[in-house]
Length: 449
Figure (cartoon, rainbow, N blue to C red):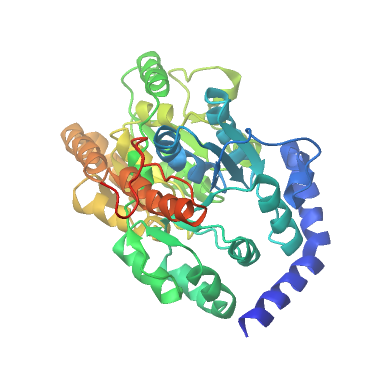
């Protein structure tokens, strides 16, 4: 039954490929990067795309959030396995751009590529070309043909930083004939929380391990924090509210709400989640007659500026360092919320809308410790902002709680590296090589003293 389900899935995927290509071309109109590296999406390589001939660890981080979350793990793996190189794959241009920053800092040991579409031939070519020793899939990247191709090649695959919301579980359960064998064939599963582990096990994972959320181990870049501090000094003491990583429709909701709840001298900073929406949000602000400026113009907000549009990439920590209060994007409408952990790491008080199922445990923990507050809608977010700006002492308490919350949940990287070390030992034993521990010391075999 599972084999027939995989065959049907593959046939449908092949039939859908013309629509996939058209979608790429369509998105390429707004983001030309979608039209680049097209061959990689089918595992067709025009040149030797490889770090070298050393053993290769492969890490798949689909887009920006996963790539940023993987930074501490990448650093730890490169340190733990000095005789290995690392392949970083993505699915989106923005993820690849974010990964490119890592590549620039470590060019001798990192390679980047797009993960090919989940077609049997493409997945086989990809694995045969790079021949990784271990594969690591971030969060919920469950591609049946990719996992099947790895299983046929006896390549250990691990799902790391795994998460699965109750809503996603319902969707996957409808495809359980296809997904359950794929998840069950993974060599290891590192879940973010106990609830994630239970849902992944219900879907088919074998003995998932709770390792925590890698995002807690991400340290905001010092240069970005300094940039935010410089902005703060230039802008002055006026209150700053940030709508971070906003999604479609949320900017209009908050603008409407703030229009009825006056916060004296407020500067609203809008940072859309996706760069293709920058122009759309600028047009929205212009249509409302608001005084605004754009980060891309290199113009800082003046005393009369009502809104600053953060139309830049890679500067989220700077916006957090500037803000007095953050309304978390993706939570005012049912998108599931965005990464509140990075905001907490920068000491930002948080207002969370009703929709945070993508970060359910982190949201609940942030609220429980006083780092965040739940608001039912945009109007209540505006009212909460008004009340907090009127009571600066409350903001200071929330800021301290956010920092403490961030620090208390660190450690996922070390636990994940320990799990990967176990896989590395198994691979070495299967290939009759000497396994290496994260300290670089030879691991003794059975019977050795």
